[in-house]
Image 1 (tube, rainbow, N blue to C red):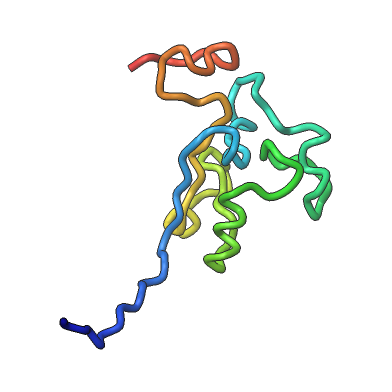
Image 2 (cartoon, rainbow, N blue to C red; image 1 turned 135 degrees about the horizontal axis):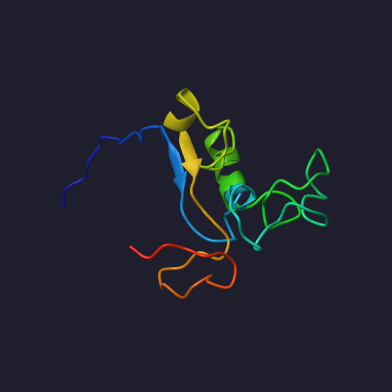
Length: 115
């Protein structure tokens, strides 16, 4: 029987990138021509500003809670004009409501390009 006395120290996360759909979208759809939007009430009524943020929730979503646990600022939407320079190096949110892996996913919300 062998025992190890060395301890492993986890390195702090340097960046946090988010991919997904409306469950984790934090405002990318505000910058798209789509009907899948969360930029009007009742969305955002539980945020400090009481204004819609583009999140499909009344307040924080899962990536916001993860950012809190990491001790970092919430990730910005990838399409946000605020996401530049150093801010991009610490993470970004690429999630978009209505997104999917099939070509037909979300077609009722936005026209998209097949690659």
